[in-house]
Length: 363
Image 1 (cartoon, rainbow, N blue to C red):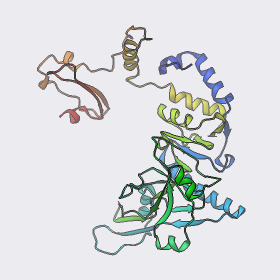
Image 2 (image 1 turned 180 degrees about the vertical axis):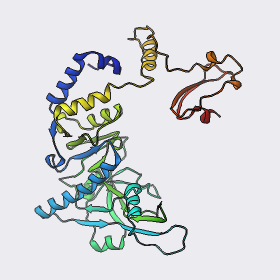
Image 3 (image 1 turned 90 degrees about the vertical axis):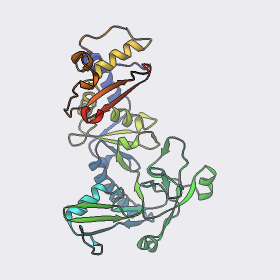
Image 4 (image 1 turned 135 degrees about the vertical axis):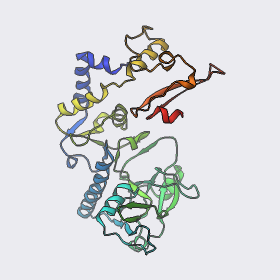
């Protein structure tokens, strides 16, 4: 049974926390202290972008160690990071400035290192110019390119997954089908190249990264996995350094796999992890009470009773300033607003929007 509860109702009943804690701790999920304790084919998920990037490089290093131990054939594509002095006509030279290298690591879609082996899964970082594949589409490597191809950065062959609204994948495909078998399943053979240069500036330098338009699937932010179904274990960091900070992230991270036993919480103790998740889903905002009142009045199972003080955060400008609408001063604070516009010509037409600065948005 699925029951809708607002944050205040969840937090107000101690029994809710006990039930939630029992579901998380005793429902079959796994609790570990670091990523070395999760299966090697796990999808790693992070609430923030920086830990996800750092983990991507660590993921490549761990795969290299594993392949060296078991004899798996692999090759590594290293990016060509270049720089030039801003505003000059000088040629691009290998990047040596630490600030521009950090900027490239932070802003570039492609990583410094890409690891290629049979069964490796990637996602595209660009839309193919001729529509062969789109950004974020899953790509599978069946035929490993040669080191000569990588040195010359010539096009490499991958298989693009069929687009069906959502994607079901594994960061590593163990039993790799042949190209012919994949084509019968709707996969398409594509050629991936180095994308057009994208320049990034930092201090007195302009930098560019040249790398195949791919990134590994094994590590990403939680938001990036929205809509995907992961068929292998999923490891989620919940620690003091990196933890979900909004309810949508909790929903996404707990619903990517089909089995609870495939969820790995990485960080502190089970009690600490449960407390962090609970603190996120029970925190309301200035619109939670208003939303609850609207839903109670509109839903057939709602009680129809208006919450007291539910409109304490609503600015009724027409009531506060009973003048011509054009003369009503708009707030200039940058605290964020939800606004409702109603047509004076056709009262059945309205628009609801959000903005950081109301005066700038409506003027």
